[in-house]
Image 1 (cartoon, rainbow, N blue to C red):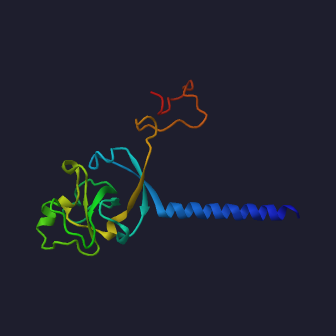
Image 2: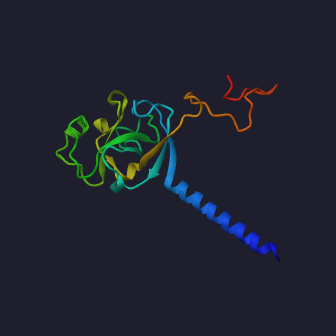
Length: 179
């Protein structure tokens, strides 16, 4: 019966680790940038860590991840699941002068509660509040907290598995990190 305390300790540690991993996975998510609407800040293929958050925690100037615009006008377009943009204004802030025609037609000079103005850093290549108007708190996934390093020398290809010597194996298709 001397093994019982060791087993119970191992089970306790395992449960604690599993709980911590579950908590991190619920709170943080990794998103891959698609397109060049955020260049030069972020490039196509960059990966970022996003902390899920409420609109009240977002500050002007932060990079955020939001769902695409909704409504009849946007339903026919092939939009990505997530958009990465800069929060140009949050509830209570003045509507930016360069927010574009979609917000200029509105009478408000301040961003209303539950809404935010999102703009891409590359205006010519960005679908954002300049075209769509306000984004809602329900569309918000979270705030970008970190950009992850590129896989291998910035080429976007995955790193080989640990211990791999980089050579191909006869009779098999070359792995993606060998060209």
